Length: 134
Image (cartoon, rainbow, N blue to C red):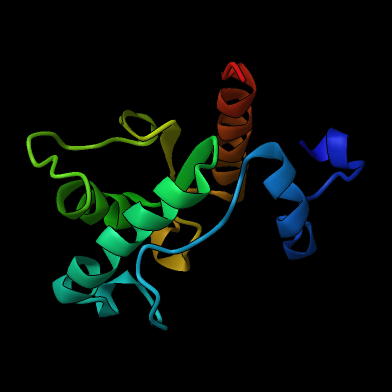
């Protein structure tokens, strides 16, 4: 994607251009917080079903979740899947035609993932997206 956009580094100003590749950015919970620990289970109960509707309506090729802390409640509350523990990477669940993918959260609270680790996960996401048939 970086090469297709003619840049070495993706920046926030590229968000709109990424829509053309089937990628959009959003949050599970639409409430300001300093970190995931500040979010209450009721926040996810309120917002996870709303994100599910948004994904069904916009139908991106892939929905990428930043961190398992966000994906776990979405999986349980929006998709009703409570029988498995998700891991990073592609997920077996889909929302309509939208594939789901989880990368490590880039938060400083997740500092055991280095910048190189984080970049490698985004490269895996890009490879996953390119592997999908249109």
